[in-house]
Image (cartoon, rainbow, N blue to C red):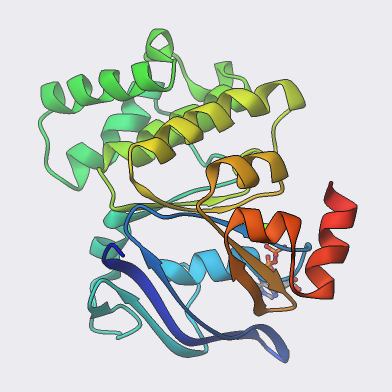
Length: 244
Ligand code: ADP
Ligand code: MG
């Protein structure tokens, strides 16, 4: 097994009286592509957001490599450079061009000079098929193009792991495939990925591991083959009956 990138230990998250995550203990290893599945409201986004502390757990611990990042002394900004998030609604900077979106953090946070940042930016935009859009503003892009820019922007930080929260849910159906193809290519590079998704075909073909959340518990944690052909819990079976 490769080394552990993320480890959660008895992770719990509540919002007021609502217990959203209940005692999740797991490890994600380098190079794993984990699809996080489950019904709406089961805690998938909260779980993902706890991994880089966009949500602070109510109880339990989160480790990034050997560092307990739930320790308030940890510089979480630094950790988030390594654990970047791609959101459902892209969250691009509307007042910056595509290239500026991609080079902003490497220049600002990593101190890269503009030339280097743009060289790298162009390489990444080429990878996601959008080199020719470098100088346009996000408002001129389709949803699928915006999401591919968001992925290029995430990659520009050379992160250890990317957290995707329903990256294709806000897209028109004809845009979904382009984004999934980019993600599939990314998965093959060996970068560690955790992806909340309702794209069952993608989860089955691209993920190396399936986590199924049911009402805040990690109800299944297994291979795609096992999950899709022989789910262990009734809730997973019901979920699949609806989705497939
Ligand atoms: P999923 O991503 O699986 O749809 P979420 O993690 O977004 O589920 O939400 C799980 C539950 O937590 C839902 O009942 C949701 O309403 C609630 N929840 C999520 N975020 C907050 C918040 N910031 N404040 C209060 N309740 C929240
Ligand atoms: Mg969600």
